[in-house]
Length: 114
Length: 111
Image (tube, rainbow over all chains, first blue to last red; front, side, top):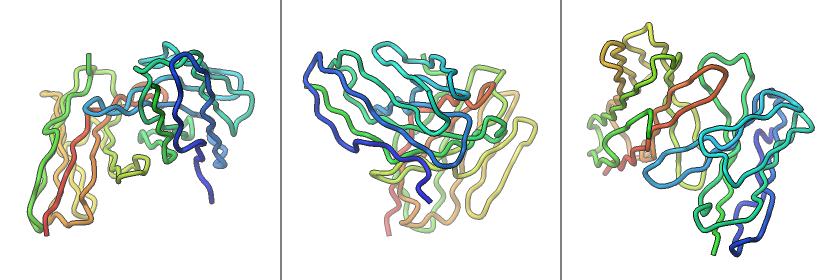
């Protein structure tokens, strides 16, 4: 029972490079989202999707791109990495009808931008 | 600006003691208030959640107290154990499943 799988777990980039963080879930969840976690700031929503083909911006979307071609996958693209994007990134999913605010999180991807 | 403010940033409690974490929110459109627990190197996991029309919810040693008029809620960890040492996040849910998180509290329970 894999749940939410994120790859890679660690990545070091140079300023200006691009990369994609992968996220896959096997729970048939309609809702998927990306958060970044920074010390003292909790988790902040980057982008989210309520189903295949539908995406929307969260609180801190600048510098990131997403797409949702399948129910299972929700990749996050960094277009031109900047040191301010050094963070731990979490993908999370849930049923759209969930009332309790229960999101299922992956184990995170730690990104360092030099 | 942070819509959900959490305090303290860290706390140390002796085994068997009570840990108390407080949160305040501004947006009255929030419709559910979950708490998440995160261990090092892991993603957050739902611990307990409360609806805004309920003043208290208890699950085992964990209790949420909710004050709608003050727009505040808190997590109490009774009989704290070393295994409770983790970072705790309060959150508030808006329409859909969009969560706004507090800044987190690192709890250390000393044996």
